[in-house]
Length: 500
Image (cartoon, rainbow, N blue to C red; front, top):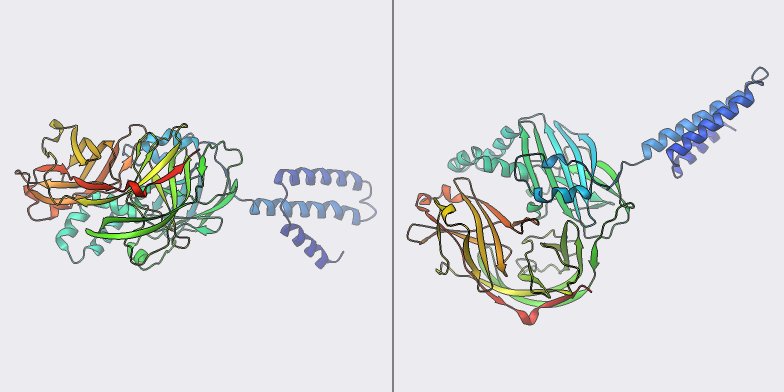
């Protein structure tokens, strides 16, 4: 056989499907020992016979090396004993669910390095719907000083606010969370890295040169038992985001997830229900009326949460996708849901996460659209004194005629407002709170962020920066109240989703 033919045959073997590494090694060792035994008596006559075992060994080494190089980093989601992201005194997102998350996770330990950055993927959790990536980022630069420099650039035209922000721990934490992102690609499909899922990620500083983070992605596609993913670390310069520059500092980390041995119990309903719904709502403090033409494609109830997947064509005149609805079941149990969506503009689909456990005997879910209008400081609620809030708690506030909010704890200081509450009846997926003077007159009204739901306690927590401290008259804030909202349920447009 000529040299070129040998090379062609080797290349052909490499291009073919790689055999199991251990099988290759065992077979090669067996063949080598047998060939060596047969040629031992003949090597004095000629070198032809001794070339065969040598050539076989070379082929085997090429196959073994190539198989190792080509073999992906395979993860089997069989559970983790530890997820270092939760090893902190901080109250981080999903900390109450850590034991459940561990059951659907795996340890990774893969690392990629970029220009002054080192990204380590510590764990991945996946229950068929929610894929969470837990990671560590180490930087050569001082992380806190890096963030302060970004703050100074953002507030260069407002020196007073710049001074407050760069010395605010809350502001620094906020910037760290927004400017240390990871992107995900599954089977070649890139998940939108800059979508409105800000409340599904969290990052915190461990030291001047290290931070821990997690990001949870909603997976709406039906994936095979074995699939490939890539993870990137995205630029921490927020100005690049607005320019559409998704610069990656570290190399992509590629691995394969194997679910073939998992026992994940997920209930998936594909109702394919379509409806035209007309609602009045509020967006950017303006009222609007819009007709939504939606299709409910899927309802998924998995161990780590629930989602409803909608399809709605993009409307240039609609300020927002369909969001004005409540979710109840056949027992009139209410389920709060996310206010923001992970929006896929290519397919016009978006999933909505809703909170709470659905019992096996639940017959259906009902989506009830509603119209909404704030009361414009109409005094329907009691107020509590901020300095002595503990004396008033728990405090009940009327959210609307359909439900109440019971505030269990309130933090109201120079840096933040944090409200932890439970609900009775039907309550919206966001709340407005009022800052009042000593006479209960309104000074400021603010819309809180999407609530964080604790599955173990059934409590919701919303957080908002206390920007009132930078406004004239902030020193006159003495009282706190939840704003009453006028709700008009549109029962005639309700959608029933059978679960049986």
